Amino acid sequence: MSSPLLVLPGVLLAGLALVACGDGDTTDADPSNLDVASRTFLGDNVTVGGQPLRLVKGSQLRLSFDSDSIGATGGCNSMSGAATWSDGTLRVTDGSLATTEMACDKPRMDQDAWFATILTASPTLAHDGDSLTMASGSTVIVLTDEETVTPDASLTETPWRLESITTGDTIGTVPSGVRVTLQFNDDGTLTANLGCNTARGDYTANATTITFGALATTRMACEASKSDVEQMVSAVLQGEVQLLIDGSNLTLTPAKGTDEGATQLTFGA
Image 1 (cartoon, rainbow, N blue to C red):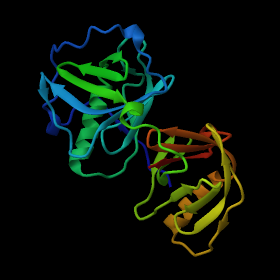
Image 2: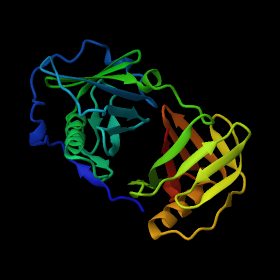
Image 3: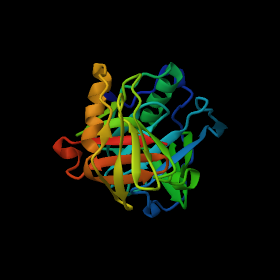
Image 4: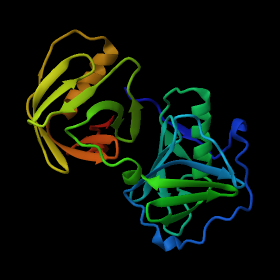
């Protein structure tokens, strides 16, 4: 079910040749103040040589930091890779990012490739409160902490829709035509569409975990793509599962984690 990984090199597409290298001023901020680990930044404020660069309509850039890696999207696919940034310069360890291969319209695909080029070109970073400024040559991108732009969604007041499935280091997208949704109700009950069949059950939750009771499901016969996704989702919605809500995203991870081959599910609000 997982989509193959594609490696995006640090090469700028011709369609976005506007983003050129130069001697633009980066920032005077102290790089030692880069308190960005475990934070996500969003934005569409981009300038090249001091002139605004308009992103694809309806899109925005997303950059998240783990302890030793980054995740990003330019509007279509998800990218990730090991990285360092403690000295005020973002350095992608292998010089390239792994990405999902979800097909989008050409402008969004080009924007993904452009953003990957910026990220792998050792841009400088400056952090000031909720604002993160990234600069590469004459290109300056200003991002804002996601918690300011999009406060964390409520577990029980949000209809969650499955957006990606991760197994080990492989991030896969949901097949076209397959819809998986979860609704956590205030009374401790769960209603779900597992991709083909519907389900109901009980749950208990705290800030970091959800414990699922047994699910009662319908038993319709499903086509292969829906059945495969349903089996993967059902395998996660059992017993105690790690819970993470980050802005408008909900991630469910089995207790043994994805390093041992378990499936991690990411939902969007």
